[in-house]
Image (cartoon, helix red, strand yellow):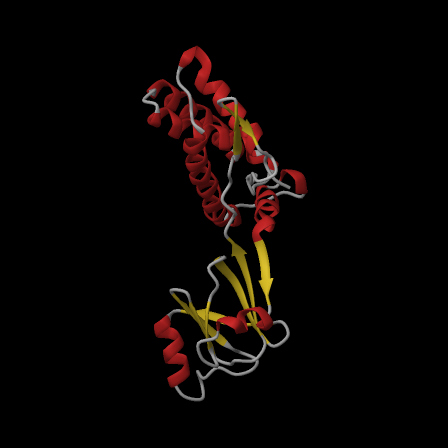
Length: 232
C-alpha cells in the first residue's frame, strides 16, 4: 500500500507547467516530497487525538477514527527484547533505535503494560517506598530523549510507530532528458487516499521555489477545501 511517486511528480509538473509557470527539477521535487510526507505523517497523531474526542459511527469505512487507524497501521511495529537488547546501556536502560518515531506502549513479561511516566514521577515511584515501588504486575517506564528505562530488564516489548522512508524520484539521463527509473525509486509510504494532499502540498512549496505565488495560492486553496471536506 503506497502512493506512486512518479504519478505525483507528473501531476505536480502538469499543474506547474500550465501556462508556463515553471519547471520543477527532480532534486527540488524530492526535497518537497519528503517535507510533504513528513507533514502528513505527523498530522495523523493530532487528527487521531481529535477524533478520539468525538463520537464515531458504526460504519467502518466512514468513521474518521477507523480511517486514521488504517493509515497509521502502515507504520505500527513491535520490537521484542531480542531486537532492543542490542541497544542496551545497562540492565534496565536501552537506547531506542533511530527508526522509532513514537512509542505507543511498553510491555514487561507477557502482555503487562508499563505506566510510562515522566522522569520525576519515575524517580518518585522508585524511591517512594513500598506503596509506590513498581512490581511485576505494575511495572513502570520512562523515556528521556532516546533512552528508555524500565523497572525491570526482563522481556521488554515496545509497540511503536516507525518513521516513513524518504520518498525518492530517481532517474537516468538519456540524450539530455531525465527518464524515471523505477528500479531505484522510492514511493510515498502513505495510504493511497493521500495522493491529492501530497500533490497540493508539494505544489505549495514549488510555487515559492519558482516564485509563482499564484501556484502557491491555488495549492493552498485546494488543500484547504480538501481538509475541510474530510473534517465535515
